Length: 74
Image 1: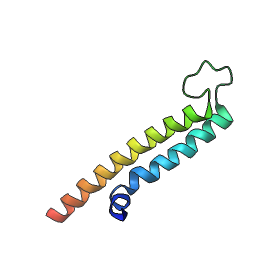
Image 2: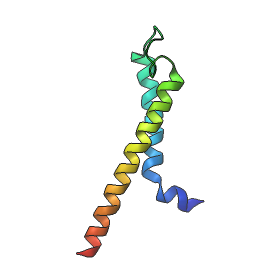
Image 3: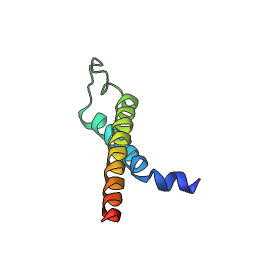
Image 4: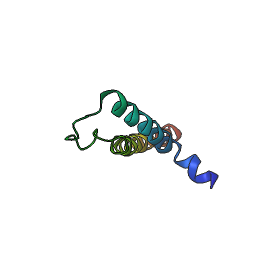
């Protein structure tokens, strides 16, 4: 179980940060009229942040992995 979290630490950390940022964005800036799909409710905004944070963390993980491989090959 520890191997899963160690291998995916960047996507997990960024996903959690995304949830927090999504909630904070809804709280301070969210759409109160209900016409905005993402920011009309806190859970939509938080889920969107979770997804975007996870994708960003996954991309960062890939970049770091590729750089480590290239550094090891030199």
